[in-house]
Image (tube, rainbow over all chains, first blue to last red):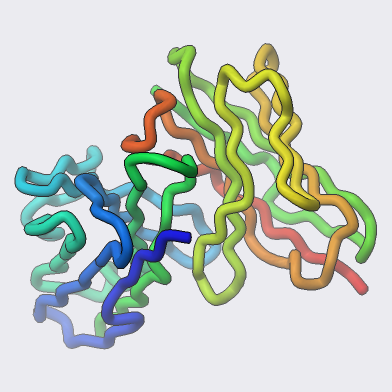
Length: 116
Length: 116
């Protein structure tokens, strides 16, 4: 099946620094990717839809300037958490769909961010 | 707006028994897709099953079946012959439209524990 990768799988950073998370579709092109956030024992909350070659679409309540999304190619989307604070500590997961075949939305393995 | 509701925060089942995880949804669209994902403690999202709103037959995938009752707006997951490895979080999700490009909205999740 299709594979979506994320890097890094975990990251620890100091408060005030910025962290970039990469999401790659390894064997298919993805014009659209999605970024989710998940707190422990909670559901996945959609943060934004990443559109190749255009601006991301953010969900209500998500700060655009805080969570910068860039979708520069058909296989790569990046999420940058700017000026991270402890409350940004969470599990971030990306996903992508194939244009044909299975209806499955393919998820990356996730990135665990801890802000000290 | 679309909404997914899972009312069972936790469920227990005896190994080799069947279990039903509940999911109800709300949408004004006639065309939509329903999904179930499994999330073990590792955090990866494992696709289990998909049901399109116009599919007349209930979807089945191995030990998983989706009990789709359109009039009641329910999409319950049935796991037959539970195994210890089935212990995980289970999420119901919906995508509006029948295309493959849309975002998924998730329910709160159900934590399933399989007892030996």
